[in-house]
Image 1 (tube, rainbow, N blue to C red):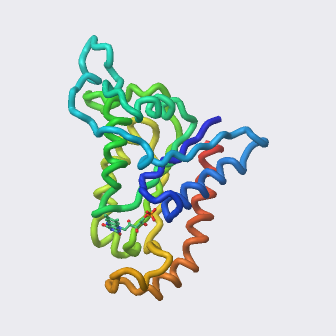
Image 2 (cartoon, rainbow, N blue to C red):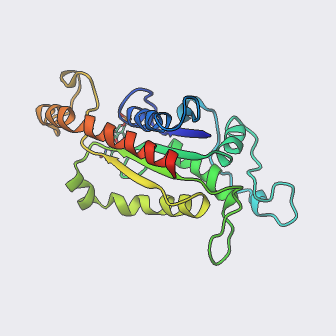
Length: 218
Ligand SMILES: Cc1cc2nc3c(=O)[nH]c(=O)nc-3n(C[C@H](O)[C@H](O)[C@H](O)COP(=O)(O)O)c2cc1C
């Protein structure tokens, strides 16, 4: 079976990518040796457009009905993802939402499959388990106060309509740099962040691993 992790962070080995890798490790830990193939996709390595609103994917009788008409480096990946056995999406929070690159990716992945009918039914070739890992600077309490869950609800709704409602994992209060003394960051207490990181991040990784185990068994 084939599972993908989609890294919506420009950083390939920081918070989001580490948690995604833990989830892929969880998937591979289940089943017989080699039973599950996993692949990490770094969106920032791929050259692609956001949706151009051409509506060819909705044009009745058109050759692109249900498919994105744009042909670029994302096109073959959309095809592969739509036939996957499970996908774990991951994004840092930028200004209260997923990164711009990840948003453009969802426009291309989800919109062609979404039918404008009463139920927002889906043309995706298969249902599959999904998960979403978000990482952010703010604490759990601040996330609640600042309304991030509401901001993220729409994309989760359309992932649910297209593939399945995603299981969610939040990585709060992330440690952003190896050496805070080199950056102007006095809003945050480096000591508090370092202590939280040491205590909490291994637990977050464990939770991500478990998320992978459950996805493989779903
Ligand atoms: C442009 C930009 C905007 C950000 N906006 C937010 C934000 O609104 N809320 C927040 O909690 N963190 C914000 N952050 C911090 C990142 O979400 C956080 O450091 C994240 O864990 C980084 O993920 P990474 O280590 O995988 O790259 C922002 C970071 C950048 C670069």
